[in-house]
Image (cartoon, helix red, strand yellow):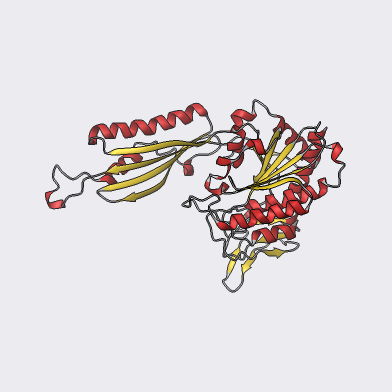
Length: 401
């Protein structure tokens, strides 16, 4: 498993939100094709790289009379340095500060990351301090691959089909848009894409984005009276009209928010975008309505200078999973079988599972064991990865009962 993970980690699969290709970067294709070949060499059935959506899908054949289950991970990494990743292995971690890069003086300190204390005696895998690690989500891939090896030692008549999918561009919210459930005939599935051991998420935000364009009128300040209309000032008025306490840095748990994500421009023209989030569908709709009302009121005052595009991104999968909670019940039971305490809390974000759930396959999110994702202090332990791998096996056994 660790050999697999280190090999995957060294491939630069950073996704690119500005790209229009599928997937958005060539490194993702490189890893996807490697995984296709690996699944084929392991003897899985129906292994294909689907060019229509860049998903690699395969099936570990089982008893067709038993329930089929799926496991999903993404090949891309977040928008952080990902070239020349050099994983570092620290055996029998002693609970002290970790030197990531001695020549550059880069340390991961216990004072800044007290969660390190939870891994004393384990084998840490870290970065060299100059890139991310990519445990999100290459640890998930490696855990699924190693779980397949174990499952291949079990009589296939004792379990159902196990379907595997490795997809692109999760980090930029595009990966599951083109996922085709017809290629993945399972009763339910799991994304292996969460953090520390025990985490399971099946409630996510409802999510939308609004892109706003403001046309001002720029004239010389000396002759501006009654003529100049400052697009930047209008942008400021939009933001000031929103509830100032309903922002990410002031909300938690089930509380929603507005986030000013981008702002650029000058007197004559400005562009800004917000992401809108709420777990509750009714409150989510009200948030979108409030944003539109603010724009309409300013257009009445300034004379139709503001245009916008408002679109939904994904929905709270919890609303659907509550209708069919079997996937959550089984994962909870499997964790307890392994002596793992489930940690269940609303996820303040979204996963590929959010979209896949709304395509008809309930898909909660399970831990990989990693910490400090999306940056140079990302790490994971061999022992945590083993627990995630064992959870996959335990779920398959539970489903087969």
